[in-house]
Figure 1 (tube, rainbow, N blue to C red):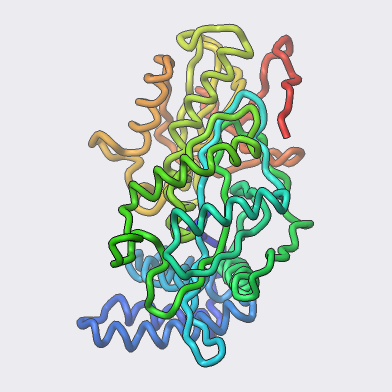
Figure 2: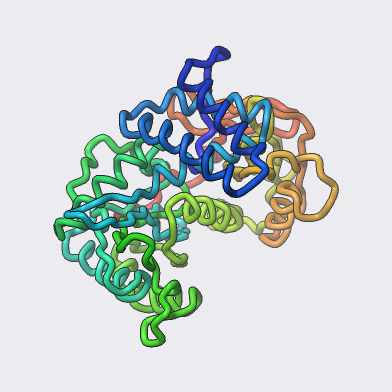
Length: 400
């Protein structure tokens, strides 16, 4: 998910070249005043491209900078995310600020984690609680009537831009958003995965968006208080949406930040859910399982894939993906404690898996041509499909 790491051709278009030049200039700026000049110039170019749905030039510029100047790449990515998830608009002569927010739900189960359309009354209930416990007094809100999986979130900055403005229109009109959900992809059957509620908040220009920003004593609340109230109030409603699942609610916040934080937070749960699933399905203790950890990516590590085997056997019977973000990609060979491989191994050991093999090589991120699932490295370095033993239960009850 966020931020997007696109693929591009070697030759840059004129629009992409201008984005690269402005991002490099902004990164090299020596004063806050000069920053403002380059930010305005870069924002004008980005706004035009995002409004027209022209993602290609932005993708190419991000990919070029990612390879040649990581700091400028971060600058361009931050500007693109800001324009995709937020806006300042004018309505009847009044300026208003708009922000797309995500309310993440970390869910895990032995069955299937639902996603899909929300009943209107449930969507309304969630919007009311969002307004009452998280958003600033006097703001307007529109909540998309859908429980999103990662696969169903906007796939690009231009898609995010379009959703932000569509929800803003509904918030200003006080109506239920009409979002075209027909072409959203199916959700991958993962045992631990985030789900998201998406909404837009509209506030007076430069006014408070969230309750923790407010100065008034009767309304101000710390983030921790807002999170506790949010959890208490919406727990029963979310439980209706996720039967058969355990879940944790994170604090609603700006779209890209929330998505990144939830992606990171779900990773340890993914390891534990996989071990619990295999122990329950195969009726074995965790100590009889082994794990093979390998980095996958085209030039740098973009994700680690963990293939599970029975101890002493070669066949990969199950697998999970541990994505990496930002500078984590450069920590693959780091010896200090806390790099991604050490985190994965620690979670495996905490779950009871002691036999852990780590590959030093970087593997191409291959997927099954038939079902689209990731392929995993076995202990010998062969890239294989994960398959449960033939005598394992193949049908699990599904909760929708």
